[in-house]
Amino acid sequence: MDAAPRVTIGLPVYNGEDLMRECLASIEAQTYPHFVVNIHDNASTDRTVAIAEEFAARDARFRIHRNPVNVGSEKNFLDALDRADTEFFLWRADDDLTSPDFLERMVARLDETPGTVLAAARVESRKPSKGRVKEIRYPERWPGPRVLNIVRRMFLSHPSWIYGLWRTDALRRHYRETWEKYPVGWANDHLVLLGVILDDAVVGDNQACFIQRIGARKGQLNAPKQRRPLNELLADKEASLARFRPLCRQAVDEREWSPLERFVLNRVIDRYAYFRVRSSPWRVWKLRMRKKLAGALGRS
Image (cartoon, rainbow, N blue to C red):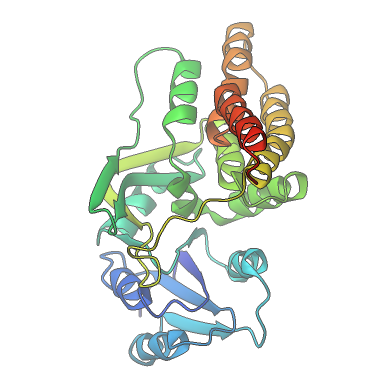
């Protein structure tokens, strides 16, 4: 008799026909077999459901849940998490891939380190429209003070770690607490990750690979870059930073630290907030100068 699944893969999707077949094939090819895939279709209007049905017909681990109307991306992601009833969980975007040993290595890392809640892999970020591939390795632990490793992971973490393998109960707690405080899509993943990084509860494996494909959909390839109005861009950055920065400080303050650790973290936490919202004082100042120049030239 097959072992009970230990991993739930939640795949929220809307109109993913371009790339979803490759994504599902990547999951199907995993060397670790004890998983289920919950495909949460958000009222797609293309062939997304037909592709999902192909996999479900030949592999009972693939299950389809259809929303009769589009409930929005955030609720679809939360529904995928809420439906999980296994020890481990991960989200998978319909345009992302992993190496065949991804699940096997991530499960092994969490099993080896009971105090951790998230396992992350090496990230390969691909931009097909520009032919770019960038590798971001998981920062291995340095010998020395714990706080230096925490700070190193804060700044070298990648947003794709949110798609790593989580202990399900821990992710539910971290994600819901974060969303209640910061119900903003921009940089929300970094705020979720910050808590587990500060808890020193992340483990990694650079032999496994998570493949992020950026702008790979047919409509995105070679599409001209859309520039947002300066007023809107500046307002968004300032508003996001105003909410994000105090929550980063709160995350540090509500944990126990030695005097040295607290000193170090208090010195770097503002820089982390600027970095993750992509809203450093220098960037905001440049946007303000561009806005003034545009006003002087009579441009919007």
